Amino acid sequence: MVISNRKIEAWFVEDLGHHDVANDVPGETTGALVATEAGVVAGVDVATAVFEYVNVDVEPTVAAGTRVRPGEAVLRVEGSARGVLRGERIATNVVGHASGIATRTREAVDAARAVCDGVRIAGTRKTTPGLRGLEKRAVAAGGGDTHRLDLSHLVMVKDNHVAELGLERAIERFRGRASFVTRIEVEVERPEDGRRAAEAGADIVLFDNLSPARVREGVDLLPAGTLAEASGGITIEDVPAYARTGVDVISLGVLTHSAPALDFSFRTG
Image (cartoon, rainbow, N blue to C red; front, side, top):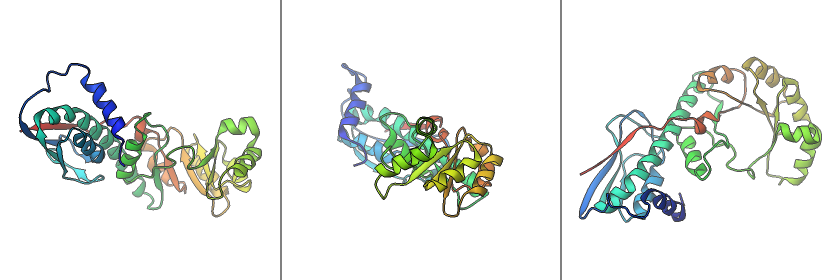
């Protein structure tokens, strides 16, 4: 299931209000969602579900992750004019938002690949409440890694945990409570603490809010087999410098919390 009917219904309730007159148009019509700028498409699956909810026939014309040019249609619809007009703004907003994330992610992936083929670009949990599934799929459509989808996917020992429990004690505590299949990631703010975390049992070390030079210091100190991640205020422009440090993953909150929407236009008739 891409998205629940309950969520789609809530979107329609929010958008239509209690007395929708403008969209009460008789007859049948056709329409197309068209890109007005170049980018990477995402969210078409959710837009399809939106139109299906109002009994409009939908045909996606491109797959998620496809690069599109201005004037290219990403889906076409046919059905009652009332249904098409009621669904078009929600569908346009969803695809524009998701495609903006996918486009920003692809930019970051391309910047990393220009330096190192092996480093992954990942999203974070800095997503819009209620839209995490849409936004995480958009990151994947752009070629990025979704990182943890929720708190149950990975145990992350953060600075607040360390402040309360101490580094080694925090790792020991969470290791004892997690499933044997769950990885432990530890956030550190000093290069030397990365090795300390790995020796205490961390599977992944996250170097947080460190310069590329300091991240490289930390990576060089890690035991073989420990994954390294860089995060904390990293921009697209910063990606090449961090890709050169030897980390396995670069995670960026800007992929989801600051990506501008890609512009689309819905055209009927």
